[in-house]
Image (tube, rainbow, N blue to C red; front, side, top):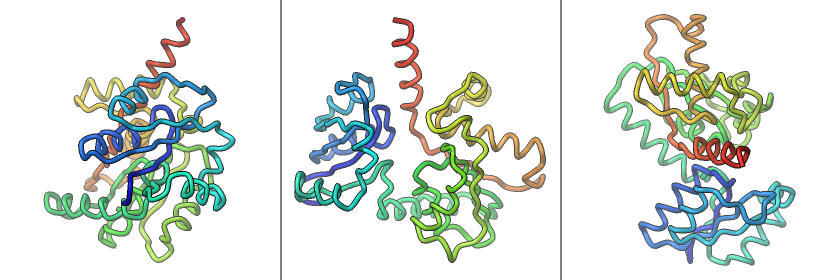
Length: 249
């Protein structure tokens, strides 16, 4: 790993929040490059990350979009030598090994699974599941992004050509990444009240709503054994509260 870790994300990144705490616990230097129009974003997520000792640097969105271009990768390597570069969302190929471990833990507890439902952003979790699951099991990824190319993007990025029994559902994005209409917020809150499970509205809330629709319209056959993968990450709620507070001022 060298001197430390370099990674990327937004001002409410679940990945960076978790990574910063991990680095704090294990005394690993961390540099985070934050996408923001604001040169001094003041968010509770970034306050945690700073308190845990990370070096926070701000990138304007136009530069952030180029972060994985070959010339920019060379720039990061010159600027931060001997740092492990973790892509946005933690979507490093080594992350798939951790997902394989998760699948092994599921198989230890549950047998004869028919369907997995998983939220999808960068796709690393889903890719690891596709590689590790049994051939008879179907994986459905619910996109949090407004795109019609996610399936092809995931197949290319994660080299999934040889795998079958997986699909992406791209109609449950609710307007695109970061969009959280009132109906979705209400659904997420009612789900928590009913089941005592918190769903973030950016990823898991959208995926759980989709699963309810699959059940409602019998798109998943009755009697199927379904596992919903809750990918964690509740920073989205902090983002919503933060934006509401700024609006009210």
